[in-house]
Length: 104
Image 1 (cartoon, helix red, strand yellow):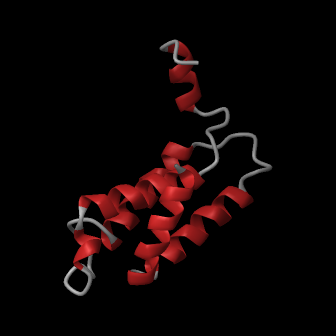
Image 2: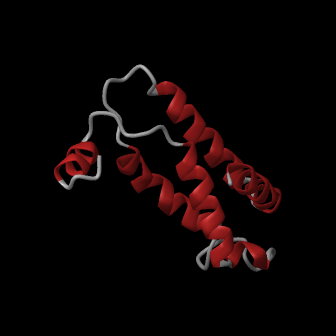
């Protein structure tokens, strides 16, 4: 599945280079937070998701030039791939909620 998302994501990056920049920021975020005791992927997602929405999906800036960027599929691919790149949550509120709900 990851290979599929990466291949599709790379195609989107050819049309919208801003996605490549966002990918590098997410990868750098993961590398920079490895030594931290706590990390919340969902909290980081709060700034990543709006950035994606400006680049792909029905609010995409370049959708006139590249209609493919204005689709739900493009948005879903970008979201799926970039969320996958985020490190797992570590010692954050999400973890506690999952434990309380019996999801862990």
